[in-house]
Length: 129
Image (cartoon, rainbow, N blue to C red; front, side, top):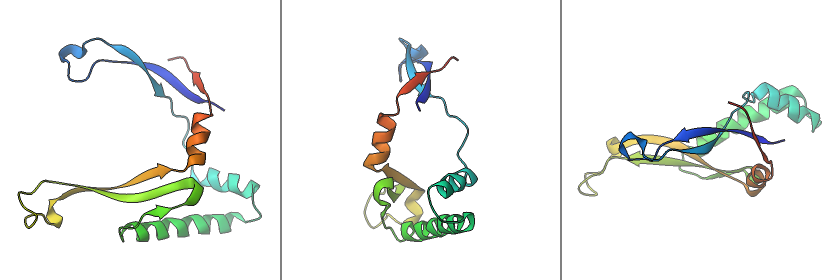
């Protein structure tokens, strides 16, 4: 398996007209992997039924939502970690900062070493544009 990429021309950031343009590698995404596909693949490696696997995935999603909403870091061992993140407007004093100052909430993901290693060792294949 290899990660597909294509060359994309980009200008220099902040330079009017783009400045010196160079080509950079950009991943070419394939078809999305759906829950149905993941369940079918997991079935091949376990004695669990499709219904059991779906149940575990749905339960995991619910538990992760709950833990993240409690400001918890969710460590999924070799899969990596999920943790909540916020962005806020600045306030002149600590007293003026409130929940209304929060602009955005998101979830960050830090992959485990095995996932990072798998990507680093996947190799790369340049595809035609």
